[in-house]
Image (cartoon, rainbow, N blue to C red; front, side, top):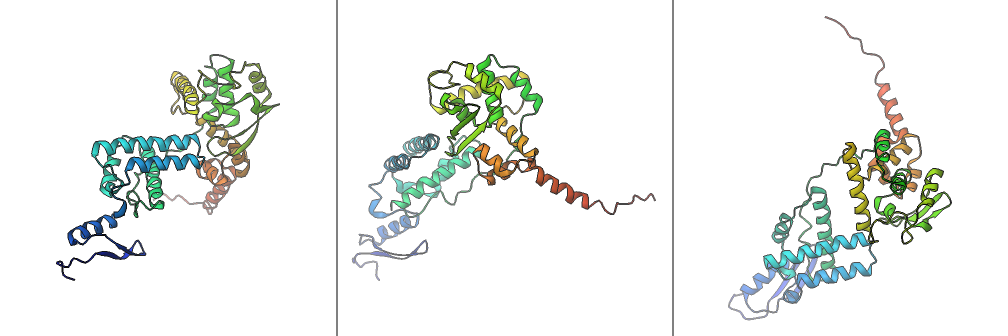
Length: 337
């Protein structure tokens, strides 16, 4: 067909493995080539002017809220929303169509995050663009081919028994001591422990649904901890509420700062309170408790327990020891020359 022809132009072919045939609503070859490139980049020409990144993000957050995602997950998506909107204003990439692979690379380069946090943020970004594809606003995920940063996963180390005793010795009062003992004996995440309700203690057992996964757990605690807990005057129905806010991040951050201060004082590194959870898991597994039972106590799946705590599984370690010992026979002879 001659470029001088003024017939309406269509785009036909295969796009991401699917047949594609749509009118470009133009008679200009130059404009048709531009639209073709935009379609290949994941944009739909009929919506290029109407969908802004701000509107798409607002719709995404509304959908997340309607799906009843956890407050923690919603908070992460709202953080992404703010970062994307701010970047779009500064870089003048207001429409969704302007978010090409190159633009996403530039957005990622603006992050000042640790490799682990950046990897999670990239996953949130891919989720957002996947939502846009589901709504037929784009046809290609511009973040899909971007590789996550390499991570160096450090082993999950428990506190040593002496370290735990040193931490407990620094408790300022019975309430603080009760909180530290609760972390040690229950393995609860600090967010769940910080907002432990009085109603969740029944006789000598704590019953709750974990905030992170909504998993039900029922944990037996020692009598001395029960006595200390019941002796503490509750605040708003909570055992360990610090300040006035019941927001999970605020409540847990206040306790996290306190524990880090104690660890600094007694010279314990790393100082992350999650090590109490690792301590309970390691203690149980090293005593021969099954992976399934440890998972039930922690509110995790058995696969997660194996992934993070495999070195503490006594049956696994025993099997490895037997395998190693089998290589000792026959004993090697050391010959002097």
